[in-house]
Image 1 (cartoon, rainbow, N blue to C red):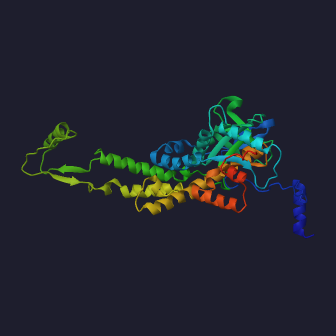
Image 2: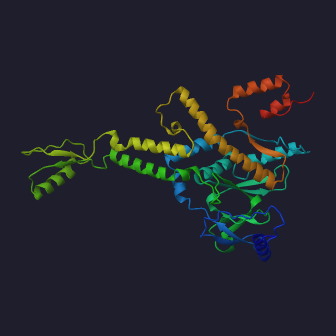
Image 3: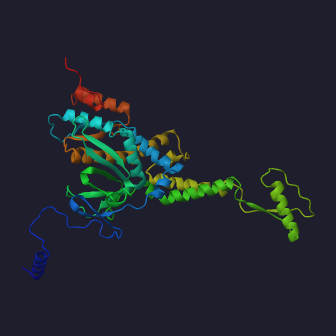
Length: 409
């Protein structure tokens, strides 16, 4: 044994490290370069101490999400996913067990009415809103013990969720905590990994949090709002673009002219009449054209916001260089780049967190039916050919279309 190997063995022995044991445990740290100087300690189940990491303030993000341009970009993605049809089906790689159909029907009922006040669409819209705004989408998962309605889902403000960066995968140890701003012990609500579905958009290694599309466009949206406000003030004449220059006048004459202009002319729409030996000269501070409104700059910012949301500028109201053929291509591009990835991410989380982790059902999965084919006629043609070739049965085709099997005679 070399000197280096001997020193390593001695060090591992002193530190209590079993080099021979390979238990699949993690040796690396989570986001070690970030430092997290704002770690907030809280007590989890069984008195376990958690060093949770809070998400940066989402107040400005929420405010920007209410602006017309950002709201349009969010709704284009959110409404398209929320309106899609979905189903619960048996996983293709799973062994079908007894009662799978009954459990799928019960889960369908539970998801259609996830709690006492939400439908599936209202629940998903809230989750998608948080995902697009801040990269966090959170849903509390609670089991009921009723096979006909096995689970209850409750939307949670993703900005209030803090993450334990040192969580090692123990299912009995809380991974998340919610700050409630309540006094005493109720200030923090610890949650296990199987009690919360936490959807991260754009996950990264240097932080346990995701990155929302509006976060990417945050600075651009701010610049657009400033340019839009300036153009509005300019168009409404609240910003003066010209001045009157009259030479060889005494201060008293200047004061009298200013009072006359303010009292008789400004804001009245009357034609001003001036009588003087020299005509006044108008000094313009701007060209008085559309260029003063910075319309080209605003259009560029709209394109940047569209890029942040993976959308073509056409969907944010920019119709230049768009015809019937390019519009169809851009709409398909928006569906494939902005809608499909987020819809699949959400479906994977529902399958893994709700069905597998919380309910323990490894043979079922959540599927968006509309992601399989956007062209209804193309889908019918493919299914007809597969049916004629004997690849699919009638019941399998009916199941693809959300219909039940043909009743036996």
